[in-house]
Length: 444
Ligand code: 5AD
Ligand code: SF4
Image (cartoon, rainbow, N blue to C red; front, side, top):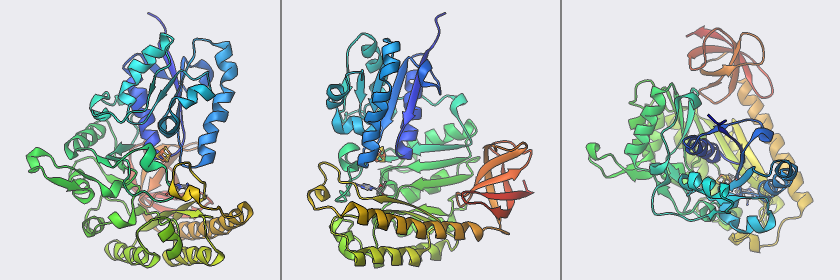
């Protein structure tokens, strides 16, 4: 028997890409490819790319440049570009980087095996269509070996919001929700294979509105309805979802946070800015006060909700007063965690037409904002010391006899224990380090 072909995948960007990379590995796995962690061993290298900011997109080209010697030493090596850069730039990638053999957009991954065969024949296939058929219907079932105690599950893709800064509506297309029956079946399959926590993914996940299962009367299901159905699956212990838009945070979904114990008390709810003027220019369609009222409602349903968010500094036209309003909003919310970015003009988006904020000003604002977020994050972690949380163990820690897992609040927790990956235990938090907590098992 010939050696199996080896596949190396590098994933950039968001969790959706992490999920997609796994599904691509499975699709090529059915064709006899096995994954490797070592690019030098690979017969095929796939870069699953991100287009959200200029830096992320340019990184792909520098990484491709670095593959040149490898390709020169191994002429049979096939190099593919997948993901959002592939979608945005298509065949242009082949012109800029002749060493690339195939380009595949996020909606065409089910066609990857055929494209890989074409590449082996010396063709250079490019597929950035938004096909009629659903790629999920054409991707293989997920093999046992790949499964860990936690899994991502894409339920929704694309975005109809058209925030003025964002490429997602162009790279990922219009909002599409998968039918609930398919999601429930995939979730049951994951749980049978040992998964205990599922994070539902979507660019706009709380806008989910998939077809309800026929045996449950059909109709349109909301994310709340889907979460409640998932919560009935025995063996599935934890449910999370990301990323959400404030305007799609329905009362029903908020209520589910108070009623469904399996729905974890951590919510990523980006607001981007605390200035109404900037929110308007961003086409966010809500004010800072709307957002704060929403957080109040969420915390009324689930008082211990750990909030997370995204912020953009240096959006065109942002003044010092606008920036101060963002800092005020951050102080008012108290985040457990937040991601912040310097505005990056993206070709084709409305904001890219506007004059940018000076780079040094934006840099300084980013530093100030990140310092505030870091202090809130530390405070949130410190506040855990002495408390009991539930921890789902994911893997062995760096020290002997130690396991690492995540608390309900998504903090990484190190614990000395014999419990295996996949076990959930009550853990008393004893100390807080900059990026993790340490605890002791109180009860398994
Ligand atoms: N520049 C900087 N940050 C951006 N994001 C999206 N588009 C841009 C851009 N053009 C950020 C937003 C979003 C997160 C995924 O990335 O904060 O929520
Ligand atoms: Fe990057 Fe957004 Fe595409 Fe995810 S969806 S890969 S974050 S551009």
